[in-house]
Image 1 (tube, each protein chain N blue to C red):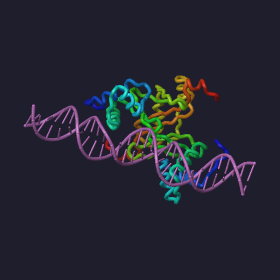
Image 2: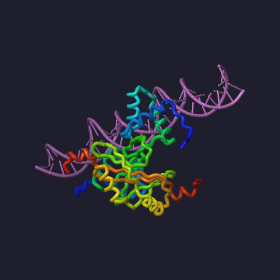
Image 3: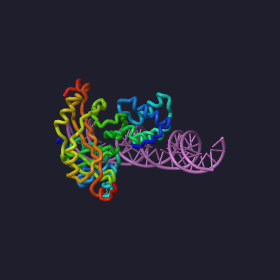
Image 4: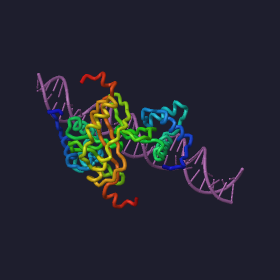
Amino acid sequence: MNTNIRLTPQRKAVLEVIKNSNDHPTAGDIIERLARDGYHFAYGTVYNSLKYLTDNGLIRELKLGEGVSRYDGNLHDHHHLQCKICGKIDEVDHDISPQWLKDIEKETGFAIESHQVMLKGICPSCREGDSG
Amino acid sequence: MNTNIRLTPQRKAVLEVIKNSNDHPTAGDIIERLARDGYHFAYGTVYNSLKYLTDNGLIRELKLGEGVSRYDGNLHDHHHLQCKICGKIDEVDHDISPQWLKDIEKETGFAIESHQVMLKGICPSCREGDSG
DNA sequence: CTTATATTTAGACTAAATCTAAAATAAGAA
DNA sequence: TTCTTATTTTAGATTTAGTCTAAATATAAG
């Protein structure tokens, strides 16, 4: 992690929005929230800031298979669980077994650098209303 | 799974391309391969066919966090491993522990319906040339 | 102050995928 | 077969997420 991080006003504002969100916003969500706070940055600036903040370990980029990137201010290792009905994303602290990863490395010869588990299901509030 | 599957010539050709591929092609790849085989279907037809085949369980859609969907004719449960350098996708048969999923269901209250593990790393042939 | 480097901006551009309305095809009924 | 209805395909416009570019601005170093 870079110790010489340059937080321009734009990057700072983007970081603030993410730190103040707990719903894993997309770039679009972030631009919307910045605008609500009176910041009207260029589209590209927000993307550049997100990349810079991600590269420097201040935020995390999540790709949950929706075709959109989401951003997370929670730097602790965790996985995600998305409701198929309402789209809500929950965080899960359990990590998968390191032995499982080692077995896969042995089997495939890959050096595994990162892993992400994506769980899809029905959240408690959507389950209440289901019929099956 | 629907027992009354209607395989139009378009759907059949799309299915064939996927069954004959072992590299998890994207829609773009599939259109390219169809064209090589002399099939020039409308863009939308290929997407409709992919959706139809996926919905009917004849193929699987993979969302590996690249922002593109890939398609897989291997219907057996498995996970995927992508090389950060060359982009090659490998298949992994090991499945994660059912107990792990149960623990998460208990913790979150979600009814988990599907899970996908995405592993990123460096493949054996790219490792040979690395300097770190 | 001057020069070099980094960043932001507006807007054009790209890629993946969806949508739409018309045309074509297939299936079912008489 | 012919008529009617439902399904599928087609071409192309549209949407969405994100990248790229060149000029303008800001910051840092000498």
